Image 1 (cartoon, one colour):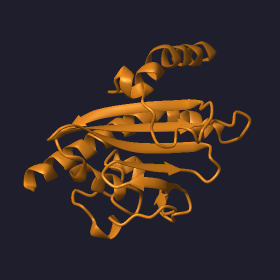
Image 2: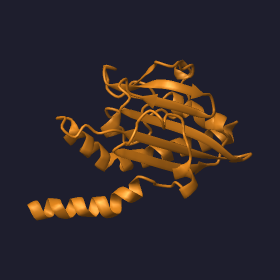
Image 3: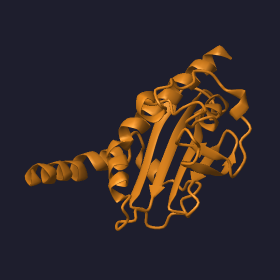
Length: 197
């Protein structure tokens, strides 16, 4: 049993973790300064992921703005992260006027979530916790008239002696599956919207 856990840990740390911390991102995107980088010093988890979307930023930003449980969902594995409710396939007007301080709910009762810290419409949106231990930023970087790079960065400082560390490790281990599906879900929706307009 111990050897199995040790083997899994070694494989994860040596091969899977380095790949999942930079899925889709170029070296220059990893080095890029993004909003919120200064909030979490020496993060335990620092993941930058990216995908090219055949759409302009204004076709992408509305999908980011409306994310969250009891909102549009996460465009990911709905059974796991949206209580089985399908993520929205349309823009929801009621969530298109965000404000700093708004909660992005991660639980049905809204008690668990992250908060909008700041944003520039069609450019970036920064989420974070109240204590400054985590940030999650979404950045939109035009390549040309009809292609945009969506880059997301998650920075988390772990509290190694906290009882929640086991949950943090589980989230880290499964994060790439959800995040990849989420980003590809945004890509699909935004590209469809761009064709419709």
